[in-house]
Amino acid sequence: MASAKIVLKKDKANTNGEVPLYIRIIQNRQTKFTSLGIYVIPGENWNEKESKVTSKYPNSTRVNNLIATKLSEA
View 1: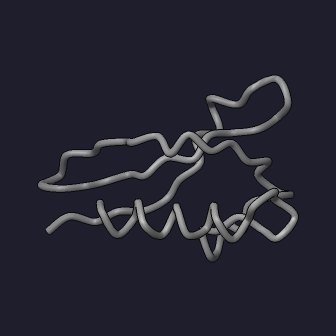
View 2 (view 1 turned 90 degrees about the horizontal axis):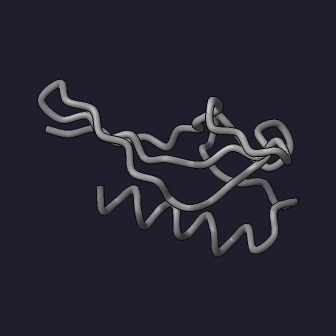
View 3 (view 1 turned 180 degrees about the vertical axis):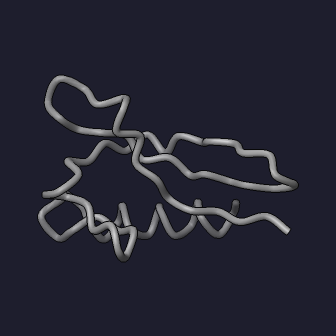
């Protein structure tokens, strides 16, 4: 059985301080990271507890639906 979680790659921050969102998939003790192509500012636009973007982020509803869809596919 595989487990999936949304994670921030803080080591890949760009010059604006934004970090990319990745899906971390663990199956049979093997880890795979898949990029979502979304960049957020960690404290301002990202809710760590809920793994969702905040309402301050542009198109937050659409982005949260995309995150939920990709997570369910994984």
